[in-house]
Image 1 (cartoon, rainbow, N blue to C red):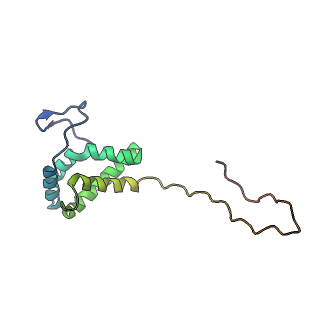
Image 2 (cartoon, rainbow, N blue to C red; image 1 turned 180 degrees about the vertical axis):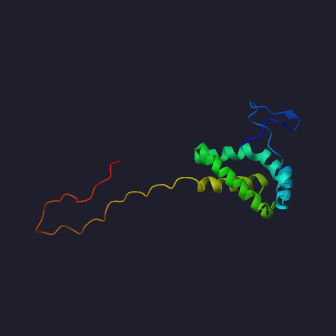
Image 3 (cartoon, rainbow, N blue to C red; image 1 turned 30 degrees about the horizontal axis):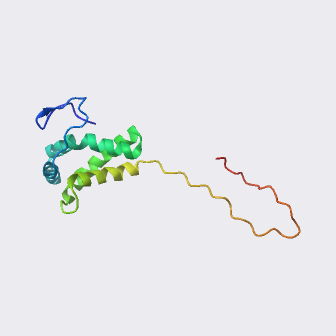
Length: 142
């Protein structure tokens, strides 16, 4: 999801440079504000500045590369749509972006299968039978 290596904040970013300096809050606020005004170039700059970190976050949540990519793409669509609602008084830009990504990463997670519960316990055995009867239902293996 990342674009080719480029000059970033005065240093050359290479494939080996896995920890480039994070974008400033001011830059992210500017990008989000301009995205909220419909500026696709600001969206491209926002993507370039955050994609590696947000994809990594999605991967941490999903533990699956394909699901993390799906979640990140969906999150960027949502970020574009919701950019006008970003409020700096409520959160930092990166926190807001991470929240959007986490929501989408959780949404692509497979649903957990329901926990098996034993059938309800029958009433006390009737006095005519002191022997336990074999259950007629299958017991799941663990």
